[in-house]
Image (cartoon, rainbow, N blue to C red):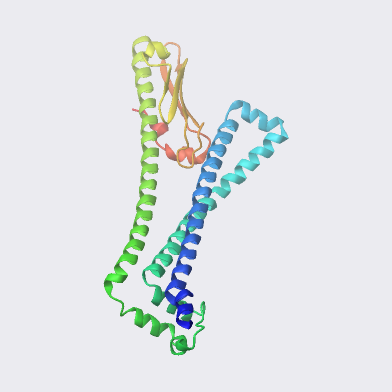
Length: 294
């Protein structure tokens, strides 16, 4: 009867597996929290970019000057913008905690007996049978030394899985950063190329006609839309508006080049290149003001 109860009860191995399962569930909860926070953060970023783009227009600036509700909303947007870096850091912390918990669970499932001994040594568990007095009094160092005698094959699988999880997480994070940086660099190159094309066409037309040309005269499309920007040529002005966030630069940010003629008898083409007022956007295109200069 006693043996039957012992078999049906929570043996050390079963205890280790139950605890490992609970730890794995906790890891999954942290992973779920990380994914939910990531989705919320993405929505907050999109809303922030739309709001800042709205107040970056002429009507938006007028609203800020005349309506207290808009000033309050704009302050709220700035507060959200200051919180976003901390939220991104929280995403990393949640991911690390989830990986650590899942790794601990894997070790417990792969090595249940040493796992229990470690928990006992850490005073997390306590033996209830009289046969484990010597083991209970063993120090953590002695238990770890015993774990060192475990065959390498048993250790290779859980630690290999843990190492693979860590490597995959690092690779995904690194690839995401590289793709994001490459996307921003590509968008900036595209912007500068479009501006250079406009300036070159305007110079060529002015050399022939001594006047500023519009889109039709320059043989350029009056509007063009790409994945990153919307381009428009209206009269003597080239305007580029970002459609997506570029790093810390919000969507709806504007770059423009305006052309005018100076002089009466000796006419000269004047080109004015304007950077956005947002310092984060201006830093993306430090060479924009030098495009097309001789």
